[in-house]
Image (cartoon, rainbow, N blue to C red):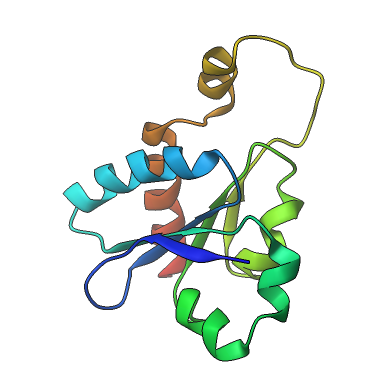
Length: 129
């Protein structure tokens, strides 16, 4: 279902969520966020369906209701929307048909640690309002 890849001491300020290779980008982005003294938890959710049928106590231990969640997916944003919840934010691709080496596409579409940092900082500023 889903599991914690990296955690912090105490309650996280933000949960970063991905379901595939994007987890590596979140790890890099989390390093930048930690420089701003943010407490970050990274969650990998390779099977949303399995995660949803796991015991509620386990699901809440991974993703508590009161923590903002930022999702990153190289697929359609809607694929993570159910996990990040109504107050969460997802950075994804909502079109298809591009062809280039993955590093070029990652840069073009914002799948970089720097963009994760910017998106999370902006999201948290809005979330706290």
